[in-house]
Amino acid sequence: MVVSPSDDSPGERITEAEHAVMEVLWERPRLTAAEVCEALCAVRGWSLPTVKTLLARLVSKGALAAEPDGRRYLYTPLIARAAYVEGESRRLLDRLFGGRAASLVAHLAESEALSAEDLAEIEALLKELRP
Amino acid sequence: MVVSPSDDSPGERITEAEHAVMEVLWERPRLTAAEVCEALCAVRGWSLPTVKTLLARLVSKGALAAEPDGRRYLYTPLIARAAYVEGESRRLLDRLFGGRAASLVAHLAESEALSAEDLAEIEALLKELRP
DNA sequence: CCTTAATGATTACGCCTGTAATCGTGACGG
DNA sequence: CCGTCACGATTACAGGCGTAATCATTAAGG
Image (cartoon, rainbow over all chains, first blue to last red):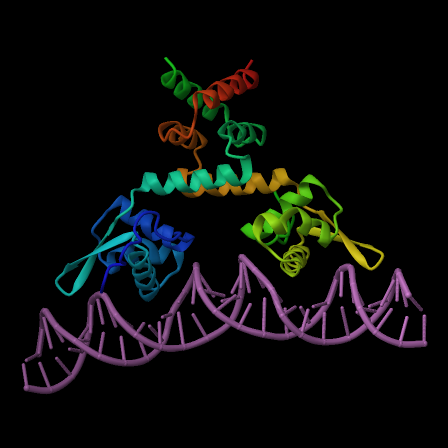
């Protein structure tokens, strides 16, 4: 199979089902399809073919590398989890909060999504960030 | 807060195109399809029929009310923006940060998504939240 | 050798989404 | 009255997504 010619920067968007697969491989790279299935099929109620389809789509999107290992492949993320998380976070921020992170935090606080513990943790974080 | 017997509060998921329509109506409720189009079609490159389809889908999802006004309808949100934002935020939080808001803030900070200004604003926010 | 089991590739398929054209009908100007 | 126009309703349709069955190949075991 050939790798897409030029496209490799953002790649195409990763869907939610695909994301579940990525999480497994971010945790433990270089797994076979069967191993990914072991980690996911029970939880998500998927069958092995489903996992294989998702792996194939992720490879074709440039999100995974498939390294031949005998007659099967070992799959490994090509994009960092941090980059993905960053992208998704920014999308949410832009779409719902006009890109203003402070608005997000304010909303979380108001909607009680933030426990006292969370608040303390964030406070500590900020202290670290601005000495 | 527990929801009643059969699920109806989350309704079906609102897509991104639909969300754009919701934003317009959250800002100014009781608009006609043509008025929503005025606010959106140029920006998004949509045609009036497209807007009408989205409006119809949102009505059938229970996200909008269509109030008859002569031979047309005035559309009004049935779900609060805050509820939608809350849902989306929580989904992101759960999916990417194990539900830990502090992790989100930490990530934003590390990835430089937070400007010094943002940080100051959040700090001020926290001060208000914990007197 | 020949069968079998594992594995990737190919194909399938129904639903959702984005985007729209077409249809039927009632209102309004002439 | 009659033609045209403005609406909503209905229908369309391609592409993406979730989920999977089937096909082809090959390694391995008897």
